[in-house]
Length: 219
Image (cartoon, rainbow, N blue to C red; front, side):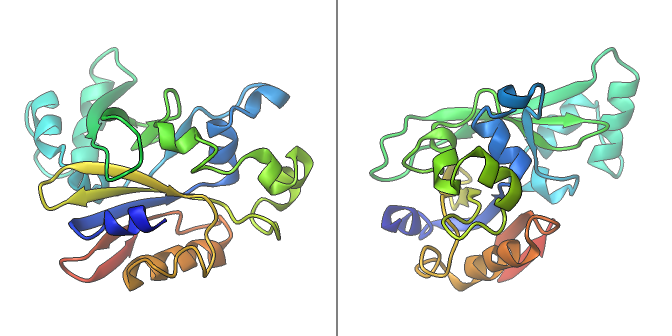
């Protein structure tokens, strides 16, 4: 955990996503057990997500300009074309001693489900047993289905993105969110992550922490 905390020293903002039960099952490919299932993790529709990832100029180019709302411009562009979605590539840089190479994720936009991260392919840290819990950590599949948000052994994990002072992006995970695991993190992050646990997956699943303006915003 200390390496992840150290990586925040050069941080401007953190965008974090509490992994809901459906998101966890998608990452762990558990939908194959009962057929079908989710293949993405939704971040939400708030345009601060795309501002965080610094892709507004790419959207303006794709839409041949944006008057007011980026989401509305994308809706209009997709409705006028044969495409049902558009993806933007985010380069993810490694940090510190964790042996993960430079990689990329694809931030996808659709009219029906704005800003989402496709689970396939996931970032290495999101599926590594060292950084993401397994079904056994929740007591098995039956326990996962019934007690994902209230399991005594394992709290739901968090995926978070860091935007540093050089406008480079990094990603990390917290496999078990409790008072001990987050105690070394800055107070603003502890504040929003405690909200996740208290909300029990019903709301406040995505949040933006802006260290420059000392703000926590639920998206």
